[in-house]
Amino acid sequence: MLTHPTIDQLRTLKLDGMAEAFTELQSQDSAKDLDHAEWLALLLDREAANRNTKRFQSRLRSAKLRHGQASVEDVDYRTARRLDKALFQQLAAGRWIAEHRNLLVTGPCGVGKSWLSCALAQKACRDGYTVYYARVPRLFADLEIAHGDGRFARLFRTLVKADLLILDDWGPDRLNPNQRRDLMEIVEDRYGRGSTLITSQLPLDKWHDVVGDPTFADAILDRIVHNAYRLELDGPSMRKLKANQQADPTARPSAMEAAGSPNPPTKPGKGDRK
Image (cartoon, rainbow, N blue to C red):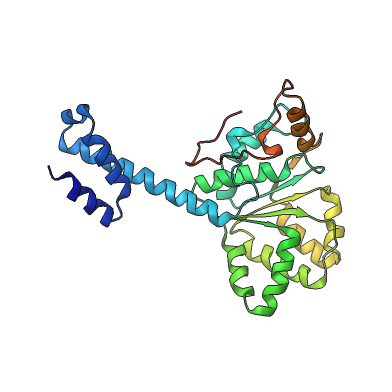
């Protein structure tokens, strides 16, 4: 059999998964017992898996997550921070995104809000959803610049078309008039079309003050809050726990989300389990 020309043809056609599987099967004695249909099925399975992995990696890069290595499989449920395990696992299944519902994650600094949000976002990328992550202060700065240099329409489309938009670190600074208008346009266009995840150190009853103008606050929060799940966290700083564990290696290991794993998974669903 002309092995090399076949592999070259597969790679020319961008069937890299099939080319890799073909090479492996050629080197396995057990593959000689397979008929043509079984060979073809194995090649197609590898190609499909390879393409799914590439699509996942592309979605993950586009999401620009703060913690790209975060994974729902690595969440620490042992640390006392009032994390509702049943609800979080329900959220990890992703149905809330399919139903265009929102998620509000509140709690003190360091409790793991951003990490948990990125873990859910990484799972969403695995499940085929598009995700866009933005820290609120930087987002408003980018929007202000975009108004002046002609990029606003493109940035706005990116924000409203994502299946899941993460607005990290909401508050405590009060919004100015331009920020209120931009946020109103974003939540209005996303309402019923996409899911929005917001993290904040402020309790929900303080969000109205952040928006500032009562009319805008009512309109914005009505579109965000009424169909949202809530994770209200409380507990010690995960960063401090991580620092203590590094200082005392005999202590119980803390969650990976305290600092993030240095080695992100190379394939969907392959993370270092705690």
